Length: 232
Ligand code: ADP
Ligand code: MG
Image (cartoon, rainbow, N blue to C red):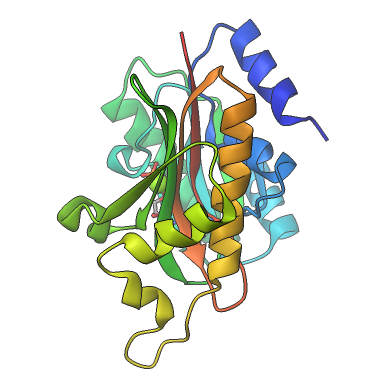
């Protein structure tokens, strides 16, 4: 398996600052962070073959260095139940992305296993001109856009900082279970914060990371989308 440093280095050598979801998730896995399984297909036939390997339901997503907001481009199809739906999703994704981004280079479409639903949270890393690398934690989905309910901690995080990051959001109670839902595995989320913090501290070439969303479960957590951005 490629190390995180290898993945960063090969993107830099290719003159790229934005890593694809595939590269970003390989990097996360090398840090010990759970992600969905995924493989790249460059044709509809290949997508169908990979979906049979991965199993149904599955997810197809556009893979392009030029498209960072995949859903906005019509580049994400979830809950695909059979081969026919996968073939159709491949056609729809490529057609929609070509129409919306005529100049984008599209490497293909990734086929992923469909993560079971969980509480959507976000872990981010950004580089502040004054403080250097900082970590962000918040609820995902509409919550982050609507309520901007996030907490920040300066890298490197201590274990205590990671636990605090989870407690400091206004909607922290949601993590403890709400209306009959089970509490989420806080230790799994704290572990992700600490692993990203440690990587950021050791790797100044990385300017920004977005794990959005992470699905948090009563037992464990999984990064469902990821983006890593390098400095110029
Ligand atoms: P975007 O580039 O638009 O952020 P995402 O990869 O985050 O694209 O996908 C959009 C949404 O689709 C996610 O927020 C998540 O709810 C759902 N999703 C994406 N991939 C998966 C997956 N492998 N399993 C389950 N749900 C997924
Ligand atoms: Mg996303």
